[in-house]
Image 1 (spheres, rainbow, N blue to C red):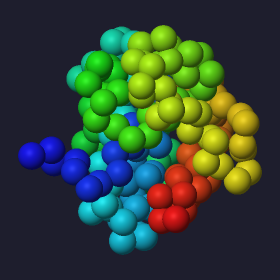
Image 2 (cartoon, rainbow, N blue to C red):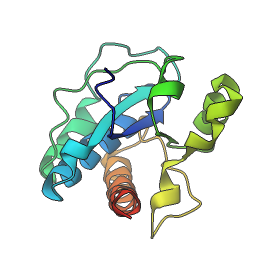
Image 3 (tube, one colour):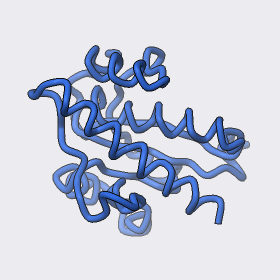
Image 4 (cartoon, rainbow, N blue to C red):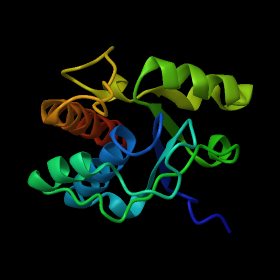
Length: 160
């Protein structure tokens, strides 16, 4: 039996799966728990590239998240796999570059599942979550602002 049966499965995707997508995974998991929805969801993250497979999220992402009450320490980077397109209901890219990479790999019958994560945002709609990797701490704060807003919108969409 599929462990995700009768659950909504959500996959957040960025390039290396060490900054944006694990932050989005941790935030969504935390907010879903607070909303009493965690048992209804399967939440994961992955990268379109294999640069950091097996590694923890970036230390700056972890520290920024920790200051807001999110724990990312148990997460490990992985690369998007072919089975993800079948197993997940929502495959949410952090930016257009990764959206295009996902759509190139996605079987046509599952393309409806792939979209930008911020399509669920009320404040940042039609925008991309910027990659904070090469910037300063303010970039990680901005990422958190964006993913928190989108997570709330996504949970509301699922609730409906």
